[in-house]
Image (tube, rainbow, N blue to C red; front, side):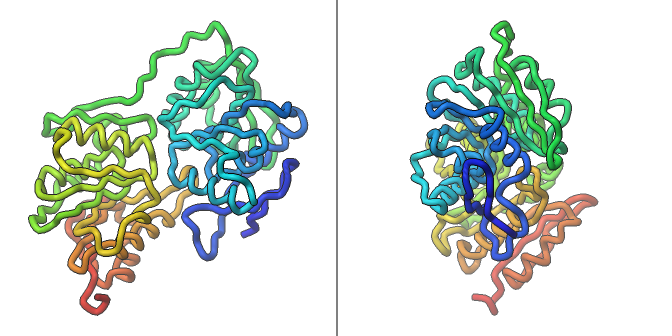
Length: 382
Protein backbone atom coordinates (compact mmCIF):
# COMPACT_ATOMS: atom_id res chain seq x y z
CA UNK A 1 0.00 0.00 0.00
CA UNK A 2 1.26 3.48 -0.93
CA UNK A 3 1.99 5.29 2.33
CA UNK A 4 2.77 8.75 0.90
CA UNK A 5 0.15 11.40 1.65
CA UNK A 6 0.35 14.22 -0.89
CA UNK A 7 -1.57 17.37 0.10
CA UNK A 8 -1.02 21.14 -0.32
CA UNK A 9 0.89 21.18 3.00
CA UNK A 10 3.49 18.79 1.56
CA UNK A 11 4.28 15.09 1.14
CA UNK A 12 4.30 12.94 4.25
CA UNK A 13 5.12 9.30 4.80
CA UNK A 14 2.50 7.82 7.12
CA UNK A 15 2.07 4.38 8.65
CA UNK A 16 -0.60 2.69 10.73
CA UNK A 17 -0.29 0.93 14.05
CA UNK A 18 -0.03 -1.91 14.81
CA UNK A 19 2.59 -2.33 12.10
CA UNK A 20 2.00 -5.19 9.67
CA UNK A 21 4.47 -6.58 7.13
CA UNK A 22 2.03 -6.32 4.22
CA UNK A 23 -0.24 -3.48 5.23
CA UNK A 24 -3.22 -3.14 2.90
CA UNK A 25 -4.75 -0.02 4.46
CA UNK A 26 -3.61 3.60 4.41
CA UNK A 27 -3.01 5.70 7.52
CA UNK A 28 -5.46 8.36 6.30
CA UNK A 29 -8.69 8.60 4.33
CA UNK A 30 -10.28 10.95 1.81
CA UNK A 31 -11.81 12.90 4.70
CA UNK A 32 -8.31 13.86 5.88
CA UNK A 33 -7.34 14.90 2.34
CA UNK A 34 -10.52 16.93 1.88
CA UNK A 35 -10.03 18.76 5.16
CA UNK A 36 -6.39 19.58 4.43
CA UNK A 37 -7.27 20.75 0.91
CA UNK A 38 -9.93 23.07 2.35
CA UNK A 39 -7.54 24.56 4.90
CA UNK A 40 -5.01 25.30 2.15
CA UNK A 41 -7.50 26.85 -0.28
CA UNK A 42 -10.87 28.16 0.97
CA UNK A 43 -10.08 28.12 4.67
CA UNK A 44 -6.55 29.50 4.69
CA UNK A 45 -5.04 29.86 8.13
CA UNK A 46 -2.94 32.72 9.47
CA UNK A 47 0.53 31.70 10.61
CA UNK A 48 -0.44 32.10 14.27
CA UNK A 49 -3.72 30.16 14.05
CA UNK A 50 -4.49 28.09 17.15
CA UNK A 51 -5.63 24.65 16.04
CA UNK A 52 -7.15 21.79 18.01
CA UNK A 53 -7.46 18.34 16.42
CA UNK A 54 -9.73 15.58 17.72
CA UNK A 55 -9.65 11.86 16.87
CA UNK A 56 -6.81 12.03 14.34
CA UNK A 57 -6.54 8.27 13.82
CA UNK A 58 -2.86 7.91 12.87
CA UNK A 59 -1.70 11.52 12.97
CA UNK A 60 -2.28 12.56 9.34
CA UNK A 61 -3.76 15.93 10.31
CA UNK A 62 -1.28 16.60 13.11
CA UNK A 63 1.71 15.80 10.90
CA UNK A 64 0.49 17.89 7.96
CA UNK A 65 -0.32 20.86 10.24
CA UNK A 66 2.61 20.52 12.63
CA UNK A 67 4.05 23.93 11.68
CA UNK A 68 1.08 25.51 13.50
CA UNK A 69 1.95 23.72 16.75
CA UNK A 70 -1.52 22.16 17.12
CA UNK A 71 -2.92 20.40 20.15
CA UNK A 72 -4.36 16.94 19.43
CA UNK A 73 -6.82 15.04 21.61
CA UNK A 74 -7.39 11.32 21.25
CA UNK A 75 -8.77 8.50 23.37
CA UNK A 76 -6.41 6.09 21.64
CA UNK A 77 -2.92 5.27 22.88
CA UNK A 78 -2.18 3.73 19.47
CA UNK A 79 -3.20 6.96 17.77
CA UNK A 80 -0.79 8.94 19.91
CA UNK A 81 2.03 6.47 19.27
CA UNK A 82 1.32 6.54 15.53
CA UNK A 83 1.45 10.34 15.57
CA UNK A 84 4.83 10.27 17.33
CA UNK A 85 6.10 7.66 14.89
CA UNK A 86 4.88 9.59 11.84
CA UNK A 87 6.30 12.89 13.08
CA UNK A 88 9.71 11.22 13.46
CA UNK A 89 9.38 9.50 10.08
CA UNK A 90 9.00 12.93 8.46
CA UNK A 91 11.79 14.62 10.39
CA UNK A 92 9.41 16.66 12.54
CA UNK A 93 9.95 17.34 16.22
CA UNK A 94 7.70 15.40 18.58
CA UNK A 95 6.94 18.56 20.56
CA UNK A 96 5.62 20.29 17.43
CA UNK A 97 2.29 18.69 18.36
CA UNK A 98 0.94 18.64 21.89
CA UNK A 99 -0.69 15.25 22.42
CA UNK A 100 -3.52 15.02 24.96
CA UNK A 101 -5.70 12.16 26.14
CA UNK A 102 -9.48 12.31 25.93
CA UNK A 103 -9.61 13.18 29.64
CA UNK A 104 -7.09 16.04 29.41
CA UNK A 105 -8.17 19.66 28.96
CA UNK A 106 -6.53 21.58 26.10
CA UNK A 107 -4.92 24.93 26.74
CA UNK A 108 -6.66 28.19 25.77
CA UNK A 109 -9.17 28.96 23.02
CA UNK A 110 -8.93 27.98 19.35
CA UNK A 111 -9.44 29.47 15.91
CA UNK A 112 -10.08 26.10 14.28
CA UNK A 113 -11.24 22.82 15.76
CA UNK A 114 -10.78 19.91 13.37
CA UNK A 115 -12.72 16.75 14.20
CA UNK A 116 -12.69 13.27 12.72
CA UNK A 117 -15.94 11.60 13.76
CA UNK A 118 -15.26 8.71 16.18
CA UNK A 119 -17.01 5.37 15.87
CA UNK A 120 -18.80 6.01 19.18
CA UNK A 121 -21.00 9.10 18.89
CA UNK A 122 -21.21 9.32 22.68
CA UNK A 123 -17.51 10.21 22.55
CA UNK A 124 -18.27 13.04 20.12
CA UNK A 125 -20.97 14.32 22.47
CA UNK A 126 -18.58 14.16 25.43
CA UNK A 127 -15.86 15.94 23.43
CA UNK A 128 -18.14 18.76 22.32
CA UNK A 129 -19.33 19.39 25.87
CA UNK A 130 -15.75 19.42 27.16
CA UNK A 131 -14.80 21.84 24.37
CA UNK A 132 -17.16 24.63 25.41
CA UNK A 133 -14.65 26.69 27.46
CA UNK A 134 -12.25 26.63 24.50
CA UNK A 135 -14.61 28.06 21.87
CA UNK A 136 -15.43 31.62 20.93
CA UNK A 137 -18.08 32.96 18.58
CA UNK A 138 -15.39 33.17 15.86
CA UNK A 139 -14.11 29.60 16.27
CA UNK A 140 -14.72 27.47 13.20
CA UNK A 141 -15.38 23.79 13.82
CA UNK A 142 -14.81 21.52 10.84
CA UNK A 143 -15.83 17.88 10.95
CA UNK A 144 -14.36 15.68 8.25
CA UNK A 145 -15.02 12.09 7.39
CA UNK A 146 -16.26 9.52 4.97
CA UNK A 147 -19.96 9.91 4.21
CA UNK A 148 -20.73 6.45 5.60
CA UNK A 149 -19.35 7.62 8.98
CA UNK A 150 -21.44 10.81 9.02
CA UNK A 151 -25.02 9.84 9.87
CA UNK A 152 -27.72 12.46 10.49
CA UNK A 153 -27.11 12.11 14.23
CA UNK A 154 -23.74 13.86 13.79
CA UNK A 155 -25.51 16.99 12.48
CA UNK A 156 -27.98 16.85 15.35
CA UNK A 157 -25.22 16.61 17.98
CA UNK A 158 -23.35 19.53 16.41
CA UNK A 159 -26.43 21.74 16.17
CA UNK A 160 -27.44 20.93 19.75
CA UNK A 161 -24.03 21.46 21.34
CA UNK A 162 -22.34 23.98 19.01
CA UNK A 163 -24.65 25.87 16.68
CA UNK A 164 -25.68 26.17 13.01
CA UNK A 165 -24.09 23.78 10.53
CA UNK A 166 -23.37 23.80 6.81
CA UNK A 167 -21.98 21.04 4.63
CA UNK A 168 -19.64 20.77 1.70
CA UNK A 169 -20.25 18.88 -1.48
CA UNK A 170 -19.20 15.25 -1.44
CA UNK A 171 -15.70 14.50 -2.74
CA UNK A 172 -14.25 10.99 -3.06
CA UNK A 173 -17.08 9.76 -0.80
CA UNK A 174 -16.02 12.24 1.89
CA UNK A 175 -17.69 15.37 3.24
CA UNK A 176 -16.99 18.29 5.55
CA UNK A 177 -19.43 19.72 8.09
CA UNK A 178 -18.91 23.29 9.30
CA UNK A 179 -20.30 24.34 12.68
CA UNK A 180 -20.37 27.89 14.07
CA UNK A 181 -20.65 28.33 17.85
CA UNK A 182 -23.91 30.00 18.87
CA UNK A 183 -23.29 32.20 21.94
CA UNK A 184 -26.94 31.70 22.99
CA UNK A 185 -26.78 27.92 23.03
CA UNK A 186 -27.70 26.12 26.24
CA UNK A 187 -25.19 23.34 26.76
CA UNK A 188 -26.37 20.53 29.06
CA UNK A 189 -24.31 19.05 31.87
CA UNK A 190 -22.03 16.26 30.71
CA UNK A 191 -23.88 12.94 31.19
CA UNK A 192 -20.62 10.95 31.21
CA UNK A 193 -19.46 8.84 32.85
CA UNK A 194 -22.67 6.86 33.20
CA UNK A 195 -23.07 4.32 35.99
CA UNK A 196 -25.05 1.14 36.62
CA UNK A 197 -25.16 -1.55 39.31
CA UNK A 198 -23.45 -4.76 38.21
CA UNK A 199 -26.06 -7.49 38.33
CA UNK A 200 -25.70 -9.92 41.22
CA UNK A 201 -23.33 -7.60 43.10
CA UNK A 202 -23.26 -4.33 45.00
CA UNK A 203 -20.64 -2.89 42.64
CA UNK A 204 -21.40 0.43 40.96
CA UNK A 205 -19.82 0.43 37.50
CA UNK A 206 -18.70 3.72 35.92
CA UNK A 207 -18.29 4.05 32.18
CA UNK A 208 -16.77 6.96 30.32
CA UNK A 209 -18.21 7.90 26.93
CA UNK A 210 -15.95 5.74 24.75
CA UNK A 211 -16.35 2.53 26.76
CA UNK A 212 -18.05 -0.40 25.05
CA UNK A 213 -21.53 -1.22 26.39
CA UNK A 214 -21.46 1.69 28.80
CA UNK A 215 -25.16 1.49 29.79
CA UNK A 216 -25.41 -2.16 30.84
CA UNK A 217 -23.52 -5.44 31.03
CA UNK A 218 -23.05 -6.83 27.52
CA UNK A 219 -24.01 -10.44 26.86
CA UNK A 220 -20.47 -11.55 25.96
CA UNK A 221 -19.02 -10.28 29.23
CA UNK A 222 -21.92 -11.81 31.15
CA UNK A 223 -21.09 -15.20 29.63
CA UNK A 224 -17.36 -14.74 30.38
CA UNK A 225 -18.10 -13.88 34.02
CA UNK A 226 -19.92 -17.18 34.45
CA UNK A 227 -16.73 -19.11 33.62
CA UNK A 228 -13.85 -17.07 35.05
CA UNK A 229 -11.05 -19.28 36.37
CA UNK A 230 -9.87 -19.66 39.94
CA UNK A 231 -6.07 -20.06 39.91
CA UNK A 232 -4.63 -20.12 43.46
CA UNK A 233 -1.10 -20.30 42.04
CA UNK A 234 -1.52 -17.25 39.80
CA UNK A 235 0.34 -14.15 40.93
CA UNK A 236 -0.03 -11.89 37.89
CA UNK A 237 -3.29 -11.82 35.93
CA UNK A 238 -3.86 -9.53 32.95
CA UNK A 239 -7.23 -8.18 31.81
CA UNK A 240 -6.17 -7.43 28.24
CA UNK A 241 -8.45 -4.99 26.43
CA UNK A 242 -10.05 -4.39 29.80
CA UNK A 243 -12.79 -1.92 28.84
CA UNK A 244 -14.51 -0.87 32.05
CA UNK A 245 -12.60 -3.57 33.95
CA UNK A 246 -15.49 -5.79 34.99
CA UNK A 247 -13.69 -9.00 34.00
CA UNK A 248 -10.52 -8.00 35.85
CA UNK A 249 -12.52 -6.89 38.87
CA UNK A 250 -14.39 -10.17 39.17
CA UNK A 251 -11.30 -12.32 38.56
CA UNK A 252 -9.59 -10.30 41.31
CA UNK A 253 -12.44 -11.21 43.65
CA UNK A 254 -12.02 -14.91 42.77
CA UNK A 255 -8.22 -14.76 43.02
CA UNK A 256 -7.45 -12.52 46.01
CA UNK A 257 -3.76 -13.50 46.04
CA UNK A 258 -3.14 -12.16 42.52
CA UNK A 259 -2.15 -8.74 41.20
CA UNK A 260 -4.43 -7.83 38.30
CA UNK A 261 -3.08 -5.72 35.43
CA UNK A 262 -5.72 -3.75 33.52
CA UNK A 263 -4.57 -2.92 29.98
CA UNK A 264 -6.40 -1.09 27.21
CA UNK A 265 -5.46 1.29 24.42
CA UNK A 266 -8.38 3.56 25.38
CA UNK A 267 -7.59 6.14 28.04
CA UNK A 268 -11.27 6.28 28.98
CA UNK A 269 -11.42 2.52 29.40
CA UNK A 270 -8.44 2.47 31.77
CA UNK A 271 -9.86 5.39 33.77
CA UNK A 272 -13.20 3.58 34.07
CA UNK A 273 -11.51 0.33 35.12
CA UNK A 274 -9.48 2.06 37.81
CA UNK A 275 -12.49 3.87 39.24
CA UNK A 276 -14.52 0.65 39.30
CA UNK A 277 -11.78 -1.43 40.90
CA UNK A 278 -10.94 1.12 43.60
CA UNK A 279 -14.57 1.70 44.51
CA UNK A 280 -15.20 -2.04 44.79
CA UNK A 281 -12.01 -3.30 46.46
CA UNK A 282 -10.37 -0.21 47.93
CA UNK A 283 -6.95 1.36 47.62
CA UNK A 284 -5.06 -1.39 49.44
CA UNK A 285 -5.75 -4.17 46.92
CA UNK A 286 -2.84 -4.42 44.50
CA UNK A 287 -3.66 -3.65 40.86
CA UNK A 288 -1.93 -1.92 37.95
CA UNK A 289 -3.66 0.19 35.29
CA UNK A 290 -2.00 0.86 31.95
CA UNK A 291 -3.02 2.55 28.70
CA UNK A 292 -0.77 0.96 26.12
CA UNK A 293 -0.22 -0.97 22.93
CA UNK A 294 -1.34 -4.35 24.14
CA UNK A 295 1.38 -6.05 26.16
CA UNK A 296 4.33 -4.34 24.46
CA UNK A 297 5.71 -3.01 27.75
CA UNK A 298 5.47 -6.34 29.63
CA UNK A 299 8.51 -8.52 30.21
CA UNK A 300 8.62 -12.10 28.82
CA UNK A 301 7.29 -14.78 31.20
CA UNK A 302 5.66 -12.13 33.41
CA UNK A 303 2.02 -13.31 33.49
CA UNK A 304 0.33 -16.46 34.77
CA UNK A 305 -3.10 -15.82 33.27
CA UNK A 306 -4.41 -13.47 30.57
CA UNK A 307 -8.10 -12.82 29.97
CA UNK A 308 -9.03 -11.21 26.67
CA UNK A 309 -12.14 -10.10 24.80
CA UNK A 310 -10.52 -8.78 21.60
CA UNK A 311 -12.09 -5.99 19.54
CA UNK A 312 -12.69 -6.87 15.91
CA UNK A 313 -12.56 -3.30 14.63
CA UNK A 314 -10.19 -0.33 14.78
CA UNK A 315 -12.34 2.80 14.64
CA UNK A 316 -14.43 2.28 11.47
CA UNK A 317 -12.21 -0.50 10.06
CA UNK A 318 -13.21 -4.11 10.70
CA UNK A 319 -10.40 -6.65 10.89
CA UNK A 320 -8.50 -9.15 13.01
CA UNK A 321 -5.20 -7.24 13.27
CA UNK A 322 -5.80 -6.08 16.86
CA UNK A 323 -6.80 -9.57 18.02
CA UNK A 324 -3.82 -11.11 16.23
CA UNK A 325 -1.46 -8.64 17.90
CA UNK A 326 -2.99 -9.39 21.32
CA UNK A 327 -2.51 -13.14 20.85
CA UNK A 328 1.13 -12.74 19.82
CA UNK A 329 1.84 -10.45 22.77
CA UNK A 330 0.20 -12.97 25.11
CA UNK A 331 2.31 -15.82 23.76
CA UNK A 332 5.45 -13.79 24.52
CA UNK A 333 4.68 -12.79 28.12
CA UNK A 334 3.01 -15.91 29.51
CA UNK A 335 4.84 -18.14 31.96
CA UNK A 336 5.58 -21.66 30.62
CA UNK A 337 2.49 -23.02 32.38
CA UNK A 338 0.39 -19.90 31.84
CA UNK A 339 -2.94 -19.68 30.04
CA UNK A 340 -4.69 -17.25 27.72
CA UNK A 341 -8.47 -17.23 27.97
CA UNK A 342 -10.28 -15.60 25.05
CA UNK A 343 -13.96 -14.94 24.48
CA UNK A 344 -15.25 -14.13 21.03
CA UNK A 345 -18.12 -14.56 18.64
CA UNK A 346 -18.17 -18.13 17.37
CA UNK A 347 -17.83 -17.10 13.72
CA UNK A 348 -14.46 -15.37 14.30
CA UNK A 349 -12.58 -18.69 14.44
CA UNK A 350 -10.01 -17.50 16.98
CA UNK A 351 -9.16 -21.12 17.74
CA UNK A 352 -7.27 -21.40 14.44
CA UNK A 353 -4.85 -18.57 15.26
CA UNK A 354 -4.52 -19.66 18.89
CA UNK A 355 -3.68 -23.26 18.05
CA UNK A 356 -1.09 -22.10 15.52
CA UNK A 357 0.56 -19.80 18.08
CA UNK A 358 0.31 -21.90 21.23
CA UNK A 359 0.10 -25.46 20.00
CA UNK A 360 -2.94 -26.28 22.13
CA UNK A 361 -6.35 -24.64 22.33
CA UNK A 362 -9.47 -26.02 24.01
CA UNK A 363 -13.06 -24.87 24.48
CA UNK A 364 -13.94 -23.85 28.04
CA UNK A 365 -17.59 -23.09 27.30
CA UNK A 366 -19.79 -22.15 24.37
CA UNK A 367 -23.32 -21.04 23.64
CA UNK A 368 -25.17 -20.13 20.46
CA UNK A 369 -23.27 -16.85 20.06
CA UNK A 370 -19.97 -16.98 21.99
CA UNK A 371 -17.11 -19.35 22.67
CA UNK A 372 -14.53 -19.17 25.47
CA UNK A 373 -11.16 -20.63 24.48
CA UNK A 374 -8.16 -21.58 26.61
CA UNK A 375 -4.73 -21.59 24.98
CA UNK A 376 -1.64 -23.11 26.58
CA UNK A 377 1.89 -23.38 25.31
CA UNK A 378 2.35 -27.00 24.30
CA UNK A 379 5.34 -29.04 25.49
CA UNK A 380 6.69 -29.06 21.92
CA UNK A 381 6.81 -25.23 21.92
CA UNK A 382 8.44 -24.79 25.35
